[in-house]
Structures are given as structure tokens and as C-alpha cells.
Amino acid sequence: MSGETNEDAARRADLDQVVMAALAVGDTYAQAGATAGVSERTVRRRMSEPTFAGEVSARRGEFVGALAGQLVASGPEAVAVVRRCLISADDAVALRAAQLLLTMGNQLRHAHELEVRLAALEAGTATAAGEGSR
Image 1 (cartoon, rainbow, N blue to C red):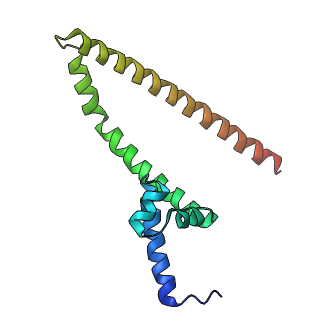
Image 2 (image 1 turned 120 degrees about the horizontal axis):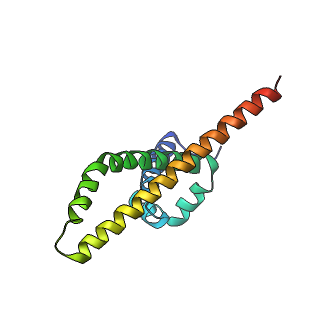
Image 3 (image 1 turned 180 degrees about the vertical axis):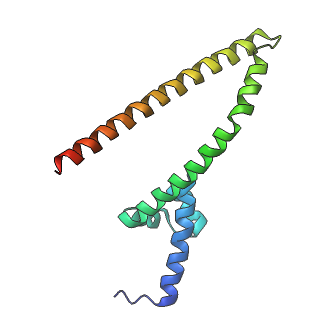
């Protein structure tokens, strides 16, 4: 053992929690270190440990998922705002609104198509794996 006391271990665990939380919301290593009162080098060293990096990744995924949910929930209101801009007296505003709606609609369609195709591939792989185990 490294001679670390229970108090040292608890302090390190607390600092790790602060660093993980900061990294999960997008802070740089330097920012996360400053928030926790440790060096950027310490943050880099901790991130080189697979368990620590995995926990940061999991927390980041949770944060992004929650943010995506909020964005999706705001979608109808956002679309309503852009649709109102379509009838703006300012041609530049109306044109930008039209471009935005067409671009976002196309991106959503592509994302949905990819999701459907991926699900079909995963289902096919699962079926093939099940047949191979017989």
C-alpha cells in the first residue's frame, strides 16, 4: 500500500468526484483541475486510468442525454419561432428561416434513416448470432 490514510483516500475520492463532474460537463483538463484544486497533470494522469475515464464517459453520456431530452422537448416551440420568421417582412430573415427549416428537416430525416438502418443491422446480427449458437 502507498501509505495513504483513510482521510487521504476520502479526500482523493472527493477530488475525483469534482474532477469527474467538471469533465462530464465539458471542462478542459486545466479547468477541471482548477475547479478541484489539482494540477492539469493530475487530471491527465487520472484520465489515463480506464476506470476513471470510463466513469467520466458515463457521466458525460448522462449529461448529454439529459441535454438532448431538453432540446427535444423544446423542439415544438423552436419550430414555431422559426415558422413565424418565415412570414417576416425582412426577406433576409424569411430566407434564413426557410434555410434553417429545410436544413434541419433534412438532417432529421437522415438521422432517422440511419437509426432505422442500424436497428435492422443489429437485429440481423443478433439473429445470425442466435443461429450460429445452435
